[in-house]
Length: 173
Image (cartoon, rainbow, N blue to C red; front, top):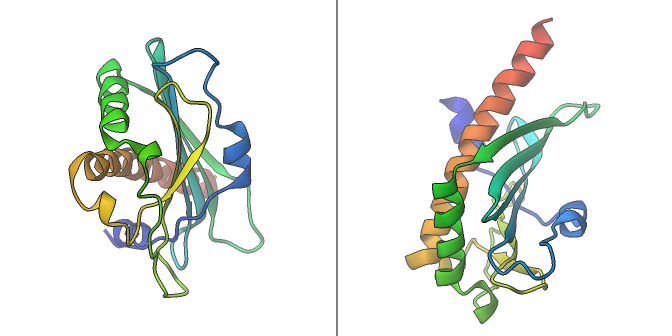
């Protein structure tokens, strides 16, 4: 469980690459794209980007992590299809969260090891990307935004665990 506690203490920062690749097809009001980008202090991963995209035609969660090793090795990539139920739940939570309605700033953490947490979203029939600081942000302490983060953290934990075990298996060969 040390891994889980290390992963829990993370720094989250926005990734220019994920900002450029996050796209929602024009005219798709049911589609969304979410990226939770993380950069860690002293954890097994240096950085992870959780990308979740969904629409009425389905969804996909992708986690790309860079391990905390020098020199940096190849990224660990894990993908998983999202159930129709999860696609619907995330879309509803995004709509209820009113991510474009303000409350995008937070205080983060003054500790150099973090954690920091940023959430990038395109949804709700909009084409603009909104970036929200979740830590130290009162709008994420309850309600739909807190529930949304809980769903994202579940996906993040599951995919990080899978990615970490995949990395350890390939290192033994």
